[in-house]
Image 1 (cartoon, rainbow, N blue to C red):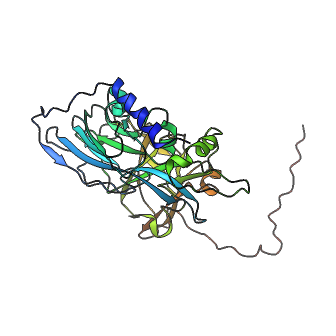
Image 2 (cartoon, one colour):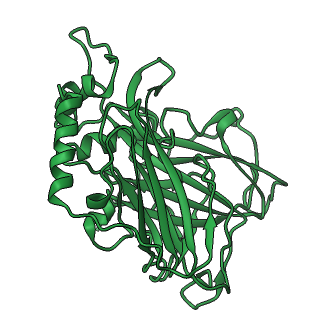
Length: 372
């Protein structure tokens, strides 16, 4: 078991080894404070801008809390950014400065930090953001590359455990002139949703029942043992089985274009929209690369995020899944889009409903004999 004292000592030693420079107020730029929202929603933002770079100020509070991850009541001692799994998506434009205040409240039990895959140097900010319970830190970095990028907690000696316990999210850096197709024509979206995939590793007792714990530290040894076998007990979108289905389904209307951002901080994934496609897909998540068109399934590498644009053409319920169908159907990696509008018979029509096979006809086919 990892104790609070051991964890805090490790963080203190790491802090001594890294000389963190003080944050100087040396940028004479406009400052915009952004109120983050819980996924799958994303805070209001401009898709393109003619304004110059800004300091985009965000604040995230780390919350360690027990959560229920399925309808059977299975519990996880989660560690989260702002209380959600995944953490909130942050949106800026290329050339902006991301300024994050990271707060680790006194009632938490673990040290934490944050590694931005979009940042340059200092372990993505991880080396400069170690905070013990009762501390906060302010990090600023320049957004020099466009795309969607993972961020995650990365404390020394505990990185995979913190990540699979919920501590990851996404930063989107938009081109200042907005998204473009491969010919350079503008692309726009009417709605944006953020789907964060989590592989979870819940220990079982001698009777095969999932165990529960009173704190993250108490769960560490057992969870690590399950993690090392690389076989997740749950694979979920946005923190639990069914988090984005039924009454929690994402919504759209026929004719609307939706940007779907998908991240997986640890394992590979294969998003697929059943009944739809990826009209434009940045599979690697980087907007300086031209988007692929008309994909049926796209590949999200572990430790990355991708983005796909789709204009809905038919109403109904669309299942959005990890097309490892075992993980989708058995482990929980399924979401829904509920789309309203008029049905288009030209795109699809049931020519005749199911009914009895007419007398004298059969679905069986006589074998064909090939002769020379």
